[in-house]
Image (cartoon, rainbow over all chains, first blue to last red; front, side, top):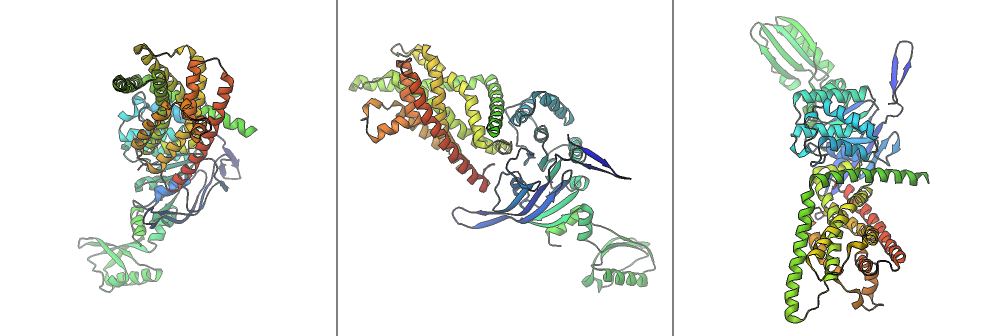
Length: 328
Length: 271
């Protein structure tokens, strides 16, 4: 594994010379229906970049274009326009890449897990000694070793998913594309998969793109997130950035006594009274702007007995996602 | 030149991986082959029985040697043609076709490697089926002692057949559920194998086609291997190799075009 550490005065930078940057530039995919000649734009002018050692998560509702995008990066679908580059070069060979695509597929059902791992590694010319050592290790790591000699068709959905991940990893790819990697996987295994993904990016510098509907997975793993809806990348950034972009002026007020928001506020702010028990009133106000916050603060201080606390809050990722796809 | 060696090395790895997989299937499912051979055996026996009853009544002449050779070659050819098409169809459902497509090898190359790795099994089936007819039909005048001439001949025929199998596979990639259609075509091809070359005028269009089409040329040469195993063998091999390679390359190129179309239409996976 090529890994170099450069030591500066008080900081260390780790870089991976054999690792690959993925660039997606203005990708569009249009399908034309054969008979009606009607066109459907599955992906519209999408651009983003994933650096080596970075985990990039694509979030989007069903049918948003995530899988199409992942398959275009893998070379399984040819884009209508735009470019996909690995390290600034047009992709000619996909041997740097492994992918786990959609659910329980990706492996041979009549082969055992061990045979599947050997087959996929053999295809890519991994030396037999390496295969033997790695295959056993992955089967143990992902809790499939007890079933390693059963035909894969007898494995549960979660087991198959773990086997697909092991098959992708055994070839030591530089780029890893994971479409719903923990779907159908039990909690303990999902945790191991998350840890493995994190290690692959942070310890081995692999470039990872994942799609999922599980917000906690994104929250815990992703360095950056792209939100895609109806084929368009509508938001992109780190999780912190997205949370702030979505609701920059969201404040939580706690005041003494009962507080009824003025009727006028309905037009200006989004107010959610979270708790009001007579002693305390707890409310969340989306003030929309800095001016709005100033006005709200003045009103609350005049009309309440006493302001106990004011705190800027953030939406959780799920809220950010829902607001984004609903046009918020 | 380096690229050629690199490509050859990668292809060798591919064949090795496919041979291992083929061996595992062979070991795990021997009944699949035995039942297939039994099924094929029964079909031709039924045909021969029916035709001999007709011949008793109407003086129809039957050349059992030609019938058996043509039929055995048809099953040999069919396992490539239907095999590739079936694999494309199944693997697009299981998702492994996508995995193969991103393995760093071209899909056409993977199919060719599979063809090579399946050749031993196909050859074994060919000889087993033929042995069954030789043992059960005393009037058959075919000897398996010429196997050393037949096996290289079968290999050259197989290369030509891959050209046709590529087209079947490409059509399957684009249109998916076409297995039954190809099954009918394959049985239709049986007529080609039973066609008597000597009945065609030498300068006719059909005779020219017969002499270059890998299946009919293969049948002609196969008859020759069994009848005159030592005669002009090198020239016959060379002739078969020439046309087989042309068909294989043409098939590969057509398949690559269809594969590109399939990638444009997102047809590599599922239905």
